Amino acid sequence: MLKDTPLGKHTQIDAGPESSSRRVFIKSYGCQMNVYDAQRMADTLAAEGFTETPTPEDADLIILNTCHIREKAAEKVYSELGRIRQIKARAKRDGRHVTVGVAGCVAQAEGAEIIRRAPLVDLVVGPQSYHRLPDLIARAEKHGAVVDTEFPVEDKFDFLPAPAPERTRARGVTAFVTVQEGCDKFCTFCVVPYTRGAEVSRPAARIVAEVERLAAASVREVTLIGQNVNAYHGVGPDGASWSLARLLYRLADVPGIARLRYTTSHPRDMADDLIAAHGELPTLMPFLHLPVQSGSDRVLAAMNRRHTRDDYLRLVERLKRAQPALALSSDFIVGFPAETEEDFRGTVSLVEQVGYAGAFSFKYSPRPGTPAAAIDQVPENVKVERLAALQSVIDKHQAAFNRSCLGRTLDVLLEKPGRHPGQLTGRSPYLQPVNVTAPSERIGEVLSVQIADLGANSLFGVALGTKDRHFSAEDCSLREHLDIAAAGA
Ligand code: 5AD
Ligand code: SF4
Image 1 (cartoon, rainbow, N blue to C red):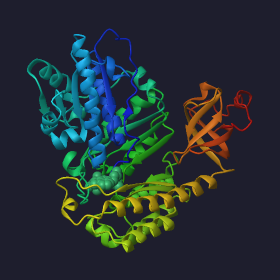
Image 2 (cartoon, rainbow, N blue to C red; image 1 turned 180 degrees about the vertical axis):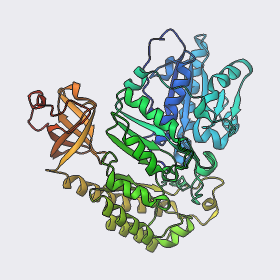
Image 3 (cartoon, protein in one colour; image 1 turned 180 degrees about the horizontal axis):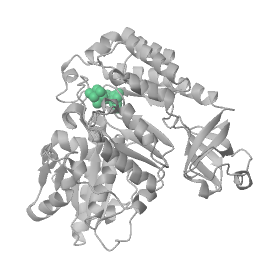
Image 4 (cartoon, protein in one colour; image 1 turned 90 degrees about the vertical axis):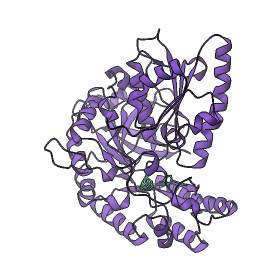
């Protein structure tokens, strides 16, 4: 399962030189897969002459790239459509036609129902059909509403165009690359196997080519994404089935790539070679999102997770033996049907035992058509209480982890200007935002940073130097460039 990103993320796409063309506004909800998909949609539409606008008011085409994982995520789409109805009506009064599309997992799950509930929608397109967008838009504009939620025989990745290097550059020094889609695990709470379908892995050579293209456009960090990413089993150039570990070893050789990550993993698919890669591959960041969902064996069985609490703890132990610097994050569901106080205490004690660097917790949300939706539900007030209690334990561990970084030297990939002049913001290996005083030419570089202070949501550090092979060896001029004082808040 992919980790959620803050809802309502707007995809940033360089407007490019084609600015006389039609404008598209794409808003993405949910996980990183949707962020990646939104970029691929924008690339497809750019090839058709669309440029991106950050405001829906001046768009000719508005696409909501939706998430169906929890009820709240789906409901947000309908309330956003309410706002878009007014934008569309205003544009019509001005003699302008606005086409509205709903993409993503709500589109897949609800299909034509969306048009019934929100007749302003012209186009409903499932995640496997984005390559057909130009054709679907043309059909919708000519003949009225269209719905495409098929799982087509052709592979969309064969048709989605690669963006121009300058578009990739404008998106920054980190990138997501989808390596696998769908899931065969059928956890009883989860819609993904229904909305995204069966597991399919992309061929390794295609992924390598995509990462080489990203690296050539200055991308330094690649996160391989998939709903069950460590189940990856794509065909390799040698005709053999490649594991995720094998793919990671190959990608670590791509010149310019300084960091690799992957998300989201299922504990059952943490193969021996992947665990070993954490010890052997310096490019693979020592931070792993490994959802466990619950610390109670009874609930884990009811969730069809196919592992026990003890299996999970032993796995964490093996990972830490392979890579002692490893830190973990996780996802938890509270108030799963029939979860007792004792089950819940098991989850809290698991958090205490593992000591996560961070974690996401969610109230169980019944999803239509999933097995758990039909079982006895836990009352809402109990869910609310458990969520608050669990989140405070998670927050305590996250704060302790951040404190443990004080005084440590961490590698930081500088990503963008910070909030204050002269400051850059990057990420530690553990995805913590770190602020450093450094000139903007350093964006894209991995610096050694001594952590000097903790903010509410980020760390502050002093740059010590570069260890980045990609940049001029010893980089002796760095100290002259850097204000060695600790970057203040
Ligand atoms: N209710 C609540 N949380 C859910 N998740 C997935 N399905 C549900 C649901 N029906 C959570 C899981 C998953 C994360 C992305 O979302 O914890 O790992
Ligand atoms: Fe959903 Fe379970 Fe598959 Fe993750 S592993 S996508 S939670 S069914």
